[in-house]
Amino acid sequence: TSPPDDNFEVAMFAWNAPLPRLEQISYKICDNADQIQPVTCDAQNTARTGTDLEGVIRLRMGVKAIGSTLTGKTFKLQYASSSSTCAAATGFTDISSTTAVNVAWRGYNNTPADGAAITANLLTGATVLETYEETSNATQATDVTAGNTGEWDWAVENYFAGSGQKYCFRMLESDGTL
Image (cartoon, rainbow, N blue to C red; front, top):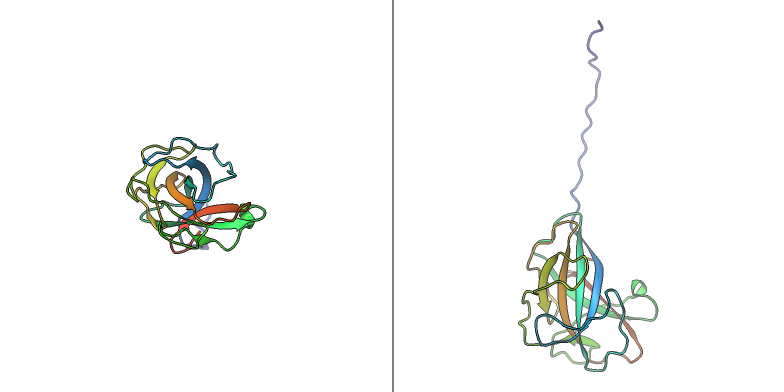
């Protein structure tokens, strides 16, 4: 027999665990209802045309946790006008308070309390119920584990959105992290 081979190497590798990442995967635009659940919604991931000045919509947003669990996050909703696709949109603006003036879109004050838990998912693939929101800075109510999708409901008013403009909405962390 041969003697044991004493020539070997040990390699050590270190890496940072991936930070939680968000992916906005779905949305529905619904008619406003002064209750926690909107009733009439457009098809999932379908743009809407013709929201009247001072018209109110409910925007259901599905955000998927990629890499690790989303926990204790605060989110905001932003909008931008775009002449082409939403992927090409720039110059996003935070949704303002319900009393803001000189803005295209602002939050809207319905009877449900801002931050109230939504009671049913409307988005296909959403697995975690989150909250109803009237302004930006929505605090996450329930953890969204990696691979799952949280659903938020935003009430927004067309205050001075330009006629014939295409508007895109996105949800991101309140510090601006996408």
